[in-house]
Image (cartoon, rainbow, N blue to C red; front, side):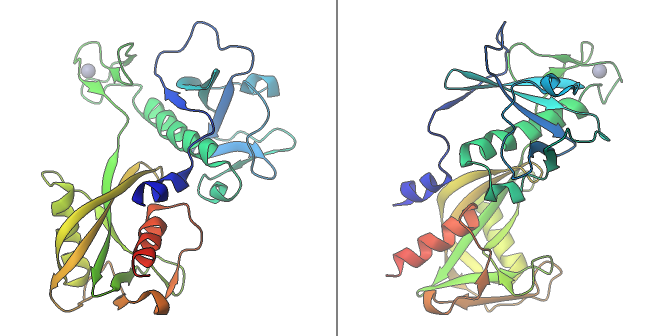
Length: 282
Ligand SMILES: [Zn+2]
């Protein structure tokens, strides 16, 4: 059942095969994910523009990166000028609202692309000696010709967890959430921690609850800006809810028939965790 939940992310009708080494020829109709900052160039209704390379719109990319291929179609990202105005009929949009309009496979490649664009842009020079870095042919990295230290795209692993107690789930409200919304708990992995240790620490820090029996559920890339969400379930062990911290303003145990408001939709692992919990209570 868990596998089918993960399948809700519906990657693509075609398999996307990531790659870092561009082919000699891009082929007849490559797919281009063009970004101004973190905003993707899309049509007014939030679809990928039916164009191949950005220069067909008279736009020049600062840099392009090869992403891989979708079936036989080669995919590229392009970094555009920060102040660029969109061509007629097109618009620049943040990826988060594009969950509503882009196909899941297109959103997934765009999420990959924006992080590669950002990594390439911010690693042109060595942080230690200041020399221009070089793109590796071996893997997705850049390296300084002197220092030799490879620089990979940065990922920030984070945990997200559904803690359960007697048919109820622990949900909490961050002050940053829209009014009334509750969600499962989440937090970033710290250096030196296993993901399971992060689960126990975050649950305790945010709610005062001690969790046990931490089990892996699924993961999801979350490009806002560069997280990898590692989903878990856990069981209540001990403690009373205490939200006298800065991160959470309220938390509680909720049964499936008395849930608070939660984030609408079915695009994120927080929603898959909640749906999995509800289905298991039937
Ligand atoms: Zn260097």
